[in-house]
Image (cartoon, rainbow, N blue to C red; front, side):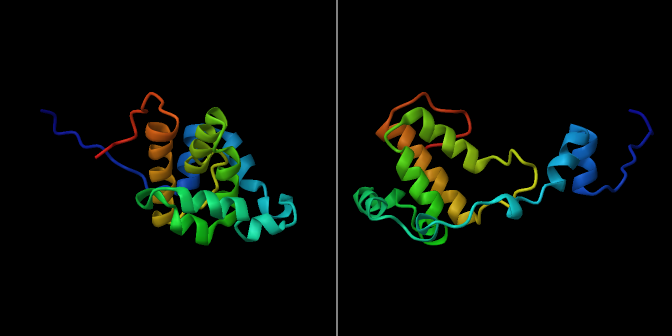
Length: 137
């Protein structure tokens, strides 16, 4: 064994991302997404009646209660894609992946709701080959 030691340099997350991904990360970080958002629609602020009916029909163990109460727009969007498997699975993946490099992410309880809903969707509603990151009990 060698007596050499590795030395580590403290860097910020932004510096690490820039070193790993290059200048495109800095360009993404410079975008102010709040200025680019469209004005909130009524469906962004409250659950649609159709979404409420869909939620009530889901089994209790997968009802996304935290998601529905904290993010009605996202819940409405999932409901809108529910009958289109390719679109819905892509939506689940987009919700759980930060493609911009600057998103804050969901609270843990909401992330669990989305994950549970995705597992239910891909194993019960539209049975699909399971991804390696999905664990079933």
